[in-house]
Image (spheres, rainbow, N blue to C red):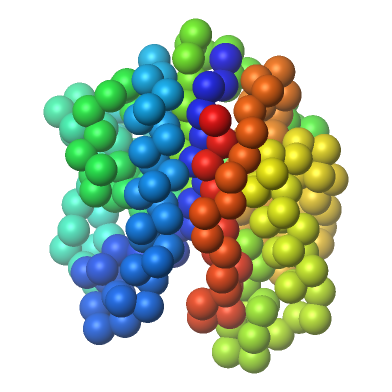
Length: 238
């Protein structure tokens, strides 16, 4: 059963070494993420799963100890799910979203439950995501999720997806749903619109909604903003 969840964005810029001189601009987001992860630790789960978006080739489970890095963005920084001691040489490297999640856990010096990863194909439909979430919640008696994913990338003219007038409303609706643990509102997010707005977080968020269907969790919004024209939301469910 799902006992707690943390929702965080997953841009590589959350990592100060990647952001370099711009790092202070996301200090508030980093602090909110650490607060959300504190909720996971307090729940004392038997299993923690980091859930993030990815493409078809990245989708699926990643075992405890799986490794990733930020070398693709020019920084020689390596991360692992959990303490890294169980990582199998030659295993699939963590995609970007899970690497950011692993980095966040490393900042908290996570020593609790075993940590696994799950990448959700961004093309997955709402019902498929919800069903995957329900299955995930049954993996252990006490399951916690760190759900990473960004909102729209179309909030300003300089955003990665340029300006789309629909983006602010989409992000507002998603943020309201995540901040209040509104499962029906999460289920109603339009996958087609999310794809057009480059909101990769939609699929992981709908998986979270499916996992929480029988959990009775309450949500709390910790942060929302759109730096660099991309919607970032941090929330904690407990």
